[in-house]
Length: 296
Image (cartoon, rainbow, N blue to C red; front, side):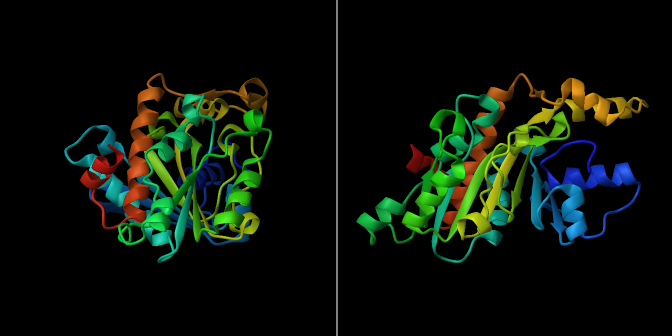
């Protein structure tokens, strides 16, 4: 079991290697650069690797968005296109897409799903009302199921009902994640073909959204907005040459999470980028300028 928590597969793999001073069979990693953005792919193929990392078998792609957050020239469009290309590789050809924004919009670090849906270019109704006018657009619908504490209904039940009604070809589930360190908060996105467990980033896991529970492929699309306090403490201590007992530390800070003071602006910025990446993937004939115009 990992001594430190992270929803990012690349971080979980590194933590396991650090703890065990070895590579983990069945969890392969490759790194490339696309338009200046480092892209890391972790493929989990072994049962033992999946168990040790706490990640289902599948492919996890992480895009480092440091240059975007540094506001380098054309970084928004380039970042959206890189993420869009990753999404496009996982989307089926043709068919309809349902984007599900998970989380609680009243809590800033958990508002990613809400903000992404807000900037998603939905077209399902338009294609059905005016098919000739919108035949060059993809078929996209969006949903915010809310959280159990405010609706009294599990997200998987709400999403399952909508999936049975509109029968999308694939679901993109957008959620906030937890990272190992502050340097990745709102600076990376992870796309996986494994589905997602809402609330797992803050230790409040609910029913899974997956191919097994919904009967269609589920792409998990997330960004870390928080860091587990115990994990952060362990890493800071280790960097200082101090070894702490993870079990003892969990008792003091196991329920605490940490987020940066500029989280409001960062969540809005990264959520807009994620929404545009979805728009470009589902509506491949559009440009960033086109999306700006349609969203007004």
